[in-house]
Length: 122
Image (cartoon, rainbow, N blue to C red; front, top):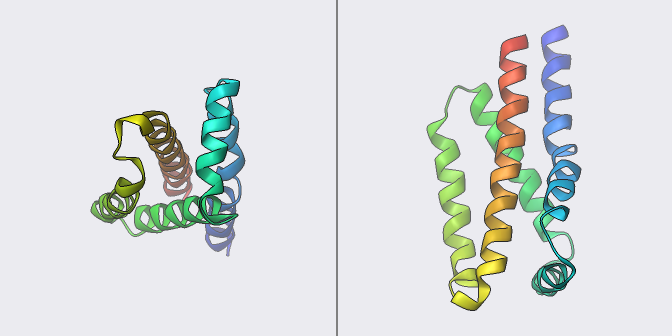
């Protein structure tokens, strides 16, 4: 029973808690000019698309950690990279590319941290 509650708490922390952690960390990296560039980039996509993508990647990462299938995490990252490549391949989009990459690494790091703690507790 306790294990199940820990797993549920882990998923809540990863899926819902990861977004504010990533946003707070990213906001410290951006100047006002860079924030405007990022907001314009984000405005081209779905209203909550980036948030949902982040939630899904953290959910899958935690699932793969709990299943002891670390290789599959690489597949999630590769798929995201392939999909995002078309948006960020131009040199003029370096700020956006770095923003996406840093956000992805922060999101993944959060999921790995929570997953590691959860595995240790279980």
